Length: 243
Ligand code: PXP
Image (cartoon, rainbow, N blue to C red; front, side):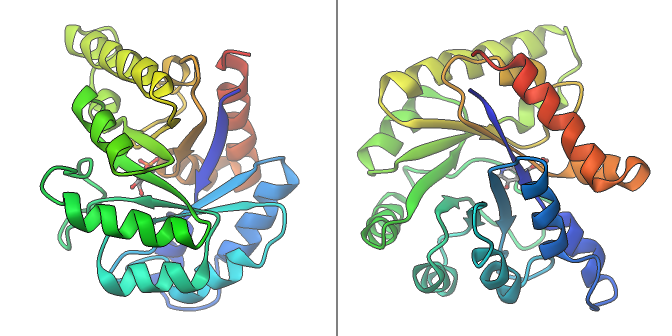
């Protein structure tokens, strides 16, 4: 069944505006647990614009909530992950000036570096996922690189107008690549730009594992509260999931 993983980076974005104690990512994680969410996701960016090292260390201490750490392949961050040992790491490309992760990893260009990082993380017992564009070549490379999982970048899909030619093409691409991912024996996850309107067709995909969703949930939380926003998204994901 498709599961919801909640990305809480933007709770930290708000907190960092004042650099004080609240809103607390730990309080958020406890709410996630209380409504049956199994995974919390955070991105420790090199510029520490939202999540801080201490947040990751504190989240790691919460029992019963899987910690998925999104991170770049920079040596400083890799060493932090090796020491902290989150349950899962999702390697992502990172640019200083971007507002959010703009594309998938270029597995060809960074082949040997990624191979080395995957190997070191796996040696510590960490499940390794690669954030990639939904295309067949990236799946083949992810398999070759020894990844356990991939997270398909749904950013392009999420920006398409519902029902447009481009929307249908993007969705078909994700569905076809998903099938191939499962066939290759890789864990299939997806995320980026998913919201209360566009999540359904992605949740429905056969073999879909976890959908990592952040911005839309935190935005809705402003009006209905965090717990309610999470419950609503969880309901959509599980209702439309292939059982
Ligand atoms: N997955 C990855 C790899 C990401 O980098 C992000 C953004 O931090 C997300 C999922 C969540 O995207 P959004 O905040 O648009 O839901």
